[in-house]
Length: 412
Image 1 (cartoon, helix red, strand yellow):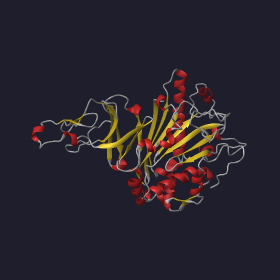
Image 2: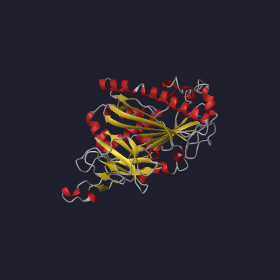
Image 3: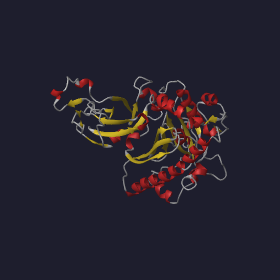
Image 4: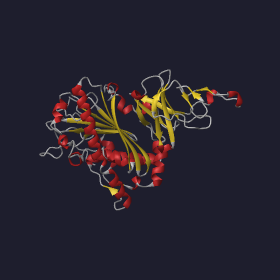
C-alpha cells in the first residue's frame, strides 16, 4: 500500500504502520460465500462482539421497551428501562414454559406479563408474580427472572454482547472514539428516520459499499455525485486521514465546496441542516472530526467492529448503519438518519429532503449488492483487487479473518 502523502495534501493515513501491515495483495472472496466461514463468523465475530441495538431515545422513560429479533442467534431480545433508570437487555423468554414473553416491537409497560399463564416480571427482569404459586415446587424468584444479556450504553448507543465472558467491557471497547467524539452532540439528534430491508448478499459486501469514496462520482450520478465530483480533478473525493485501530477504523472524505446535487439544495443549505454540506477550511469541521485537517471536508466515516458505521457530516445530522447477517448470502440492513427537532417549517422541509436524498442514495448503494453476491457464487472470480482508496475494506476483511481464526473479537 502507498502511504506517502503528497506535498500540500492532508495526511493519507494517521496509522501508516497498520496500513503497511495490510499489504497490497488481492483479497479472497470465498469468505463471502462459504457456509463454513459464516458459521465461524457467527460464533467468533458476532457472538463475542458488542452489537449496536439502537439508541436510548427509543426507551426514554421508565418502562419503555423495544424488542429486537436477533435471527443470527435464533433469539428475541427485550431491551427495557427499569425503574432505576438503567437500560437492560434480556432474552425475551418466559421462565415458566419458555413462551415468547413480549410480542410487540416497542411500547411502555409497568411490568411484563406472559400471555400464556400470567407469569409477571419487573422492568428490571426480576420475577414478580406467579399465579397459583402454591401448586409449584418452591420457586426461587431471584434465580428465575428473565435471562440477562450483557448490555451497556456508550454515548446513548445501546450495545449487547451475547457471550458475556469474552472480551473487554463496552467502555474500553469504544475507547478509540471516546475522546475524539466527546464534543459531538449525539444526544441532541433525537429525530430519527429509518430504512430497513433484507438484502440477498453477504454482510461484508454492504459494509464494503460504504468503506470507500472511490465509487461516489460513478454510482451516485442521480443523487450526490456532484457534491464529490470535479471535472478538473478526478481525485477530488479521495478519502484521507485513515485511522486503523485493532478492530475499528475511520476515514475522512472531502467534497467539492461549490457543487450542489440539485438546485433545491441551496434552499436546504440555508438551514445549515443539509446532510451533504462541505466546509472549505481545514478547521471548520465539528470538534473531533477531520483529524488530518484536510480542506473541503464533507464527512467522517467511523467503523465500529463488526457491523456498524456512523457517517458524520457538516450539517446538523448524522447517519447510522447496522448490518446483521442472516446467512452467508443474506443480511438485515438498517439505516437511520438522526437530526435535532425542527425549529420551523424550513428546517422540517430540510429534514424531509435529507430523508428522501438518503433513501435514493442508499438505493444506489444497494443496486450492486445482490448481483455482486450472485457472481461471487459463480466462482468466476476468486479474489478482489483493492486499491489504496479501499484501505478500509482491506482492514475489515483482515480483522474479520483474524477473529475467525482465533483472535479476540472485542478488544480496544
